[in-house]
Amino acid sequence: MQIKILGAHNTESRDSRLAGLLIDDILALDAGSLTSSLSFEEQLRLKAVLLSHHHYDHVRDLPALGMTLYLNSSSLDVYCLSDTIEALSACFFNGMICKDFTRQPEGKPVFRFIPVSPGVGLEVRGYHITPVNMPHSVPSAGYSITSPNGERLFYTGDTGAGFAGNIAHISPQLLIVEVTAPNRFTAFGHSNKHLSPMLLEAELSAYKKVAGCIPRVIAVHLHAPFEEELKEEMSQVASRLKANISPAHEGMVITL
Image (tube, rainbow, N blue to C red; front, side, top):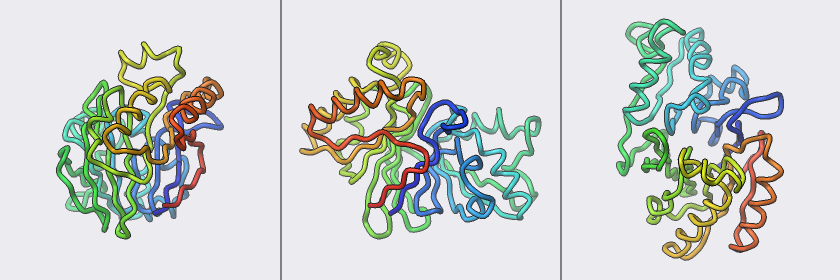
C-alpha cells in the first residue's frame, strides 16, 4: 500500500494544502486538496473518495473534481456519513454554487454518494474499510483501511480527545492522526475537539495500554504558522513514549 500526503495542513497557502490523502493512486481520503494536488489524468484515475466529515477543509475540492469528471463523462463513488451527504447536498450540490453533480448528467450522475455506518465494514475496490466514530464538533468518521495484500492503516480525520477507545480493537501498521495546534492551545482543542501534542500523548498512552504497542504515527491537519512549535512538541512526545511520530508534509509518500 502506498500512501501519498496531498494536504497536510488545515489552512492553505503557496506551501501548504488542505486535508487529503491518496492510497495507491485510486482511493482518496478527504477532498481538501484533490484537484489542487493532482493532474487531470490523476483525477480521472480515482475510483472512490472517503470523506471523514463535511467541514470545508475536508471537502473543498469536490466541486472542481466534479467538473473534471463531468467534462470527461466519468463518475465516482463518494463514501461518507449520512450527515455529510445532507450537508453537502444543502450547501454545495444545490444547483446554486455549482452543478448538482449528484444528479447530473441525468441517469449517470458524476457523484454517487454512498452512506456508511460506523462499525459496518464494506468492500471498496478490493480494500476492506470500516468507518469508526470520531469525537469531533460535527459527526465524523475515521477509517480503518486494509489493502488487498493485508496492509492496514487507520485515518482519524479530525478528532478530539477520546478517540483511542474507539480504535482499541484495531491494530494498524500506520496511524494517520490530526494534530492541529501546539500545547498552549490545548484548552481550545478540548472545546473544539481537536488534538494538541499533549492530547495526542494521552491518547497514544491509552491505546498502548490496550493494544500493547503504538504503531507508526503520522500527524496531519497541522496549523502551518505554528508548525515548528508543533514539531518540537511532537518530538518530545515521541521521545517520552519511545514511539515513531512524524509530522506530515505535502508530497510525503509512505509505503507499507
